[in-house]
Length: 201
Image: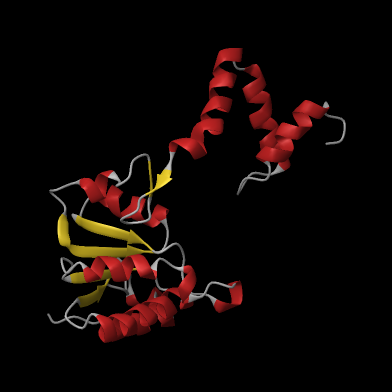
């Protein structure tokens, strides 16, 4: 799109750098912004400009927030004995949207993946040690997914906790066959996980 005016091309280039946005979609977005009243477009720009300054990382759970501690960590009605570990902040949002979990969280900031340069020291494990060291947490729930990286991270945390905090219970989200699925359509890995994590009936 070399025929675009330079100011428009600059906005298109920056928008197309966003995940899932190609040059054509970026151009449509830019043209939409151009069609907006000047005040509306300026408000969008100001909101983006203020975004980094308006947000912080919660010192307790490492989630993105507009206050420190975040609303979840500061809520006295949440259960301090249950700590749910998630890899990223968006996983915390999914858990909260479901509305079932009433404990506290810790965002690890990723999963162990040596090929991607993510080693255990890159994660928020010191925050985890600090939380467990306070003595309030009775159960750590691993909500990390079922990828190889999630399994490696779960194993590392389990080993660390068994050595350093043997009195704290470790659980993980149930894995396996989804509700409403027929066995004949289940892939081998999901079936293996279902057998490994089978429950009493």
